[in-house]
Image (cartoon, rainbow, N blue to C red; front, side):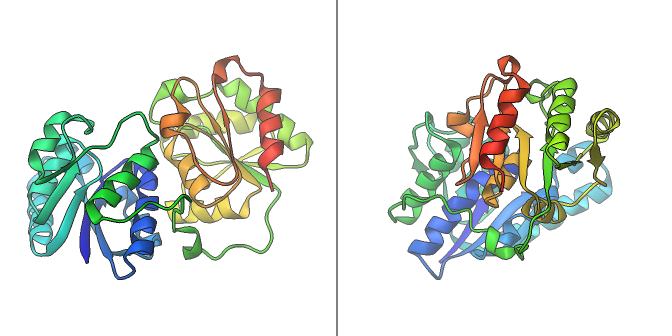
Length: 311
């Protein structure tokens, strides 16, 4: 059986989709997936053994660069997409943009129905429309979507299926990774609290490492490092950052995709939430702790959570 997944972004949403692949692979051992995904996240599906081919798309870049080169790239993408036939095409995103991509493909087009899709109009683009209640965790919703389309029962465990791709280090650094950046400013934690947490961790003998992904995050990381015993990492590809996570003692992350990556790799993770509901989009893993209502929680309580899950 050959299935195409349409799930272009973001990193957290991509990570949320991985357990559905593991479910399908366990139920249908010979199943193969291709995956349409934004070029910046294209390496993530390659970590799962059920994925045969990744088809990168560059919607974000094409929107900014309306040149003839971008047009040629779009035409080449459409040609590649339409060159293959699939048993099923699953739009796991439920947006109009992902539904339009789905319509370009050859095969049975499937997605969420009118009441289940994030953008209701998207449901008009599918042949098979699936009802999945919204008030559930995003991982559960995707798992149920795949299970109904591909006709198998869902197992209880959440298996992201990517940890085995990496060589797991035999020993771990005494380091903690502070994922302080998010694309949504309201999800971020105040800098002085990161500094206080870094000082608490340093006093316990931990090395603090600060990844970053843009100029604003770099500036924040430099400020935290200047006022604490923390190290600003060089700009790092996702694969390299995954290895850093795996070698660390744990990850402390705001509500962002890298926190979900840490959880998917079974790294001890403390996730920090300001206003979002972790019951719907929070990290899920064997060694995850969550801190809610972050603005009212003392830094010392966050550190207690860290001590509870670190290796």
